[in-house]
Length: 348
Ligand code: 13P
Ligand code: SF4
Image (cartoon, rainbow, N blue to C red; front, side, top):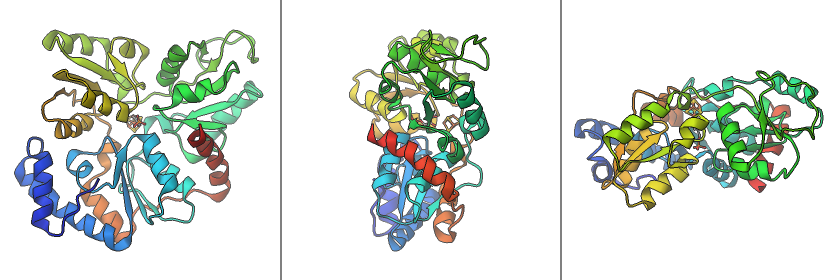
């Protein structure tokens, strides 16, 4: 991945080939200049750029060496020798790369780029839950900050959540912090879930009639998609295949045709022979797939966007590489504890 071109003109032509149906030419010329400069500096510095599937199409298709979902990018971060690592994604992703690479410089090309799920829970919340459910192992979605991961037994992503949960067999677990992902995983693995911050739990001891203890965090993007949205799109495009990220509500997932991580959604569309697809996830991903598979029609609900992922621009990526902007740091005491939970996930 990433455009390998020796001249600006060649770089522009390569981007035009992929993106002419998606990005207007006047913008493409401007973005090609930024991408060319980024790729030059990246080579000079021996850097690697990791890009999440939600990056805007001109960035996604020009500068990352690797693109993918959270799991794929964590795996790549664990094995790369390159330094610095520029993470075109959100803060918790860059933090995970730092947890895995304490001696390397990890850069996040945006000042904010948070995540409503990561904001929904603190390390104190996890400690309180552990005191309330003593001995119950904690599985934490990777969309959390390092201090929360440090209180965790094992992390998971949307791409491996069911596998991680099943690795505990019949043992009860605490699953944090996404209410909807937890409910969807409970459905998929046939386990009963309770929400102690909402439900009345009379006997909070393991081994009773629940197997998963959930939390009330939500993704501010995916919680907005509704069953009515799906019905409306199906009425307009009767052949449409609906793909919902598992951060959507269980009702939305049930009304969809497929649900999995962002990369598995991309693969599903590439491998299917249908014409119309509705992606219930960040809108840029529809653009990115349309550029890869121009014969497919992506129906996009672009009034629903992730404001955090959209913070990452080519301008800021260039600035990060030039000036080491937004260096990510994780205190060593927290990093060492968080590393255990990330490594355990990578082993599963
Ligand atoms: P994926 O791991 O499926 O790429 O999801 C990350 C994310 O933040 C979805 O909103
Ligand atoms: Fe976080 Fe949701 Fe944005 Fe993903 S889409 S980064 S879960 S706020």
